Each structure stands twice: as C-alpha cells, then as structure tokens.
Length: 288
Image 1 (cartoon, rainbow, N blue to C red):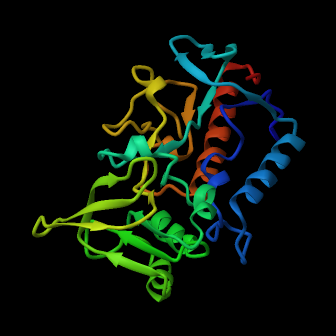
Image 2 (image 1 turned 180 degrees about the vertical axis):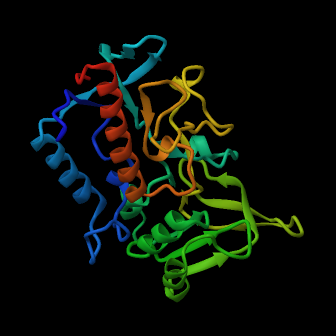
C-alpha cells in the first residue's frame, strides 16, 4: 500500500488467521511484555486499512493462473489481478482415531484459547510436544484442575523456556512414550485409550477434554495443479516468495519453510509484496 499499488485482501473469515486464536504472543518484535494474539491482529488490520487496503470477505474456490491476468474464482464472484500473493495458511492436524470426529466440540478441541474456559476445574489432556502444545498446556492450567501432556517420545520439541514452565507447573503431568488410540465417550469425552509405544500396553486416562495440538496442514487443496507443492501440500517458493508461476507469490504458514511463526509470516509478506511490485513494474503496469 505504501507503494501506491491497487491492492485488496480476500479473507474467508476474519483478518489474523491463527493469530486470532493465540492467547499470548511472546516472540513478536516490539512487545517486550508480550501481546494477546487478537490484539496484535487488530492493530495490524487497523494499520493496513489506514493505508487504504480494501478487505473483502469471500472464499476462494479455484484459481486460473494460466494467463498474464490471474483469475480467482470466489464463492461470491470472480476477481482478476495482475499478481497474487497466496496466504491461505494452515489448519490443525487431527489424530484420526475412533471417537475424534464424533466428539469434536463435545470435549475434543483444537484451540485452547477458544475452549479452555469450558474445562474449569476438570481434568484434561493435551496431545503434542511442540511449542504450541506446551504453551497451550500451561495456559489451560488457568482453568483445569490437571493437564496431562501426551507425547509419543520421552522428550519435548518445544523451546526450553516453555518446557521449564510446564515442568514447574504443579498442575501439569507428563505421559511419555504414549499415543492416543481412541477417544471414549457417548455424548462427551470421558477418557482416552493410551498405548505405550515401547511395549504396546494400553491404559485408560480419565479426562473430560482433550486438546489436539500436533501441528497443521496447509490449506492448499484449491492450488493443486496450479502451483508446485511439496509432498505435504506446502507451496514451494524461491527466496523472493515467487511460486512456480510468474507473478504468483506465497507467504506465511502455507509456504514450504523451516520455521512457521508470526514474525516469519510477516517477513514472507514483506518480501512477497516487494517482489510483486517489481513484477508489476516489469510489465509496465502498477495496478493489481
């Protein structure tokens, strides 16, 4: 927008993506005391709007990148542009076990900040060992009586500072070398069947809720056959964030990269925007 380009943002739900369901952000520059995810998202949206960005609520069903003019087929019509920056993000991965689908929203959750308050004074579980899982497990101790972290290995992948917070919290217990085989319950979660990955023995963990925090998968189904994706579905780009199609860029969690954080998504977006501007200049047309 500062480059005086005619730009628009097409958003399926609301600006911010996963930032909107992140309770507290400690690793974004400029906030030494941290900041709540929705608060940061709101500030970014206000800044973008102040520069003239038009935000449209629509869902992209398919694309056509075969011509110089790129076409986005939306549920509300068609959008044409000379260049496109893809930021569809990613969604939480599921365990794929019996009971998960049936009990989603009835004790099975993928968002601690969304549903944590529903489990006040209850015993719950968190599945995962990365930063999000451990940070959210500690967050959930604000409400739950006990939080059991279930991890398939005997060590966590989360950063040391998050691990230390979890291990020091008296409400947190660890279930090492364990995987969830089944989620039990009729109308609500009543327990988990855990299997020891070493000796394959099974046991029941009585909980009233389980938060599945085992990573994400990219929202790129609509891009298959239009840009090159890696085996997991993430968009392949070069250092300028350009995809396999000239004039089409990707940024954020949908992109193939080693680190997915808000700060890296912001970096991707800045690089993609400058690259898109330079692409338009090469065409002799600065309009999106």
